[in-house]
Length: 336
Image (cartoon, rainbow, N blue to C red; front, side, top):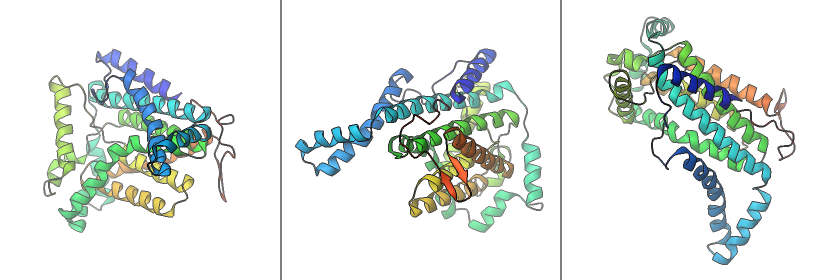
């Protein structure tokens, strides 16, 4: 349902402003009609091939039997439905998100950077959050560390969707994850249109001039150039929108999913650390105002809870109760 709604929104907006819908990943793996089957079969191969190589100890004759057993026990009809529908719906939502984000400056010229910047100064007792954090943490070594964590977010989006779809032992957890992701990206898109901003790093760029040059510096410069190309040139897409912070929201959503569906204590700690460092990075580099991060957290909590209810999770005082079966007969599908 979410994919249908945001898809209709993207099409209507594109027609209204006279701009075509574009594939945000360009020509990577070819056109969409080819890329989606590749992604689905790629997920299958990613599960079967490494497993067969490991369990067979590189004995070629043993590999077909191991693959057949895996197909029989893991890749049943319900799993195939989860992977195919999950990948397609998430891809539709993400493509529409990227297009709607790109259309934003063509739809509205409203900006609320001044108001959110004033709120930041109030919350920091008259000081700028970014420079305060720079003085506290430094502007060289920490800049490179936080940049690495921040940039890691981009590939992790697709990787973690695949992980939960392919390897969730409880199928309802796979539906939960992909539904929550779809809701979060959609709510984030709505927030961009509700309160358009550039972010402090673009609107008040001089506050961040003392930072060491990192991959984040290059990324921010490329976003500025892309935005200028859309507004005053022949650019096709731009991705500047501050409120809310989906880096914060999606990182929190990952941490919550790991906390509730993964038993490994180490992984839980790592994902919570990733969330904490992501929040710090958004303020450190000037990607977002404090209000952006707060809104991102709220989006994650709402998406996590609503998607949980939609896929049959029961939040109880003593813990989480989920479907006892690994079939989808009792799990609502097509929610994202």
